Structure formats: structure tokens, C-alpha cells
Length: 273
Image 1 (cartoon, rainbow, N blue to C red):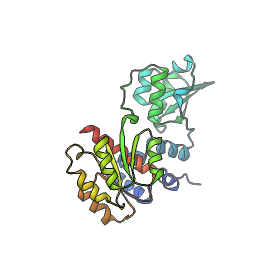
Image 2 (cartoon, helix red, strand yellow):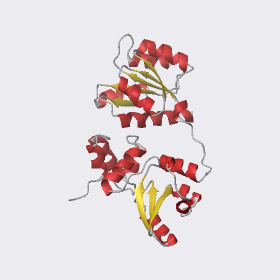
Image 3 (cartoon, rainbow, N blue to C red):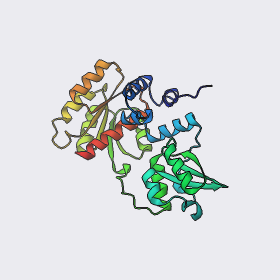
Image 4 (cartoon, rainbow, N blue to C red):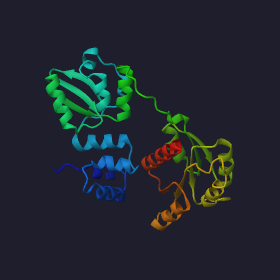
């Protein structure tokens, strides 16, 4: 039986749409980029989605929460901290003449070959996200990794009445303020000065378009990125909202992975201002 491709696995698990995959495959033509990297660049998948797909496609064991486990010094000494950080790898265990290695890119056969030659042992790759590996390196090697801004310090104003959207954002560590309509959203935006606003378009009292228009006249928050949520999924609706100046557009029903990826991109934009 032919091995399923990563894109097919992501579509089957409803992490991306078939349209996202088709667009990624078009971008891949004429380049040497892996499909996973292209999808990450399109902000439709997260690191953990790629790890899951690699595990399912190639049969790599997937390891999580590495920093919470204990490792013997003998195992840690097999890979120095500089090499671990440069290649985002982490030694997990020794079994006879085999070193089990967590890798953010378990398809890097050249690195595995170099390590196998250098250590005179077999390398058995496992897949882990870059963030999981960095956390393990920082804890077990006491490596000096530049501190990143914690997502819990980032604030999002959600103007919508869908609880699962709020829950999805909070689970990712964001501070979320919620308003159920545009009028209340406008008041909250002026009070909390969020770093990102996500608003439904169709709402009572004040819809998302009117809310956005008023926000643009507020000199204190007019540069805050605003993502539109809309049940109207036509290309014309997306074009209309993006032309108005909305930072991004997400069609309903909302895919949690897409929501988080777009939120992360918008917050990076805000931080760059």
C-alpha cells in the first residue's frame, strides 16, 4: 500500500482544507521546500500539526513534554548543547548501540548519517516540535536560549458569541476579553487596548464592519490588527473585507488550527509595529 502524503493526512484530519493543500502544492512547484514548511508559511498549520503528520506518514514515534522527563548524564553527553540547539535535536535514550533522538526534522538524513559516524552508533529518530525540544535543551543543558515573549502576556479582544472560539484561544495561553456585540466590543477595545481584535461580521446592535470603521478613527488602537469572522465564505466577501483593511479573514465554520495560526501571525505583526 502506498504511503499517504503529508498533505493528504492533514486534510483527512481536517487540519487544513483541500483548497489550502492545492494552493500549497502550487507554491511548491519549482521549489525544493517541503510541503510542511510551505503550509507553515501560509499560516494554516502549527508546529504540532506537522509533527503529527510526520509521525503518521513515516511512522516516526512522536515524543512530547520532553522537558518534564529525566535523562541520564550518559545520554545527554552524546549530544552537546550547541549541536542540540543548532539542529533542534535532543537525545532521549541509549539502547545497546542505538541512540534515540528527538528531532524537529526527522527527515534530515544527512545529519543522522553524520551523527551515526561521529558516535559510532545507530540513530533512531523520533519527532518533536521545535518548542518542545528547546524547552528540553534549556532545562537539561541549562542552555542560554533567548527568552521569547510569553503568549499569556498577549491580549485578544473577541467580539463574538461562540464559546469554543474563546476556549481555543485561552487554551493556547492568550488573555481573552469577550464582547457579545459590536457596541460592547467598541467599549472594551477602548478600555483594554488589545493587541488583536477578532470580530464576527454579522452581529446585533453594531456589526463587525461598523465596529471596524469606528476603530479606524481611534488614534490609540487604529493600528491594532482586526481579523474578520464570517459565515459568508465566498471569495467576493473575503476580497471585500480585506480591501476594507481587515488584517485577515477566517470563514466559518472555524478551524481551530487556522484560527490559532492566523492569530499568531497577527500578534507578530503587532509586535513589529
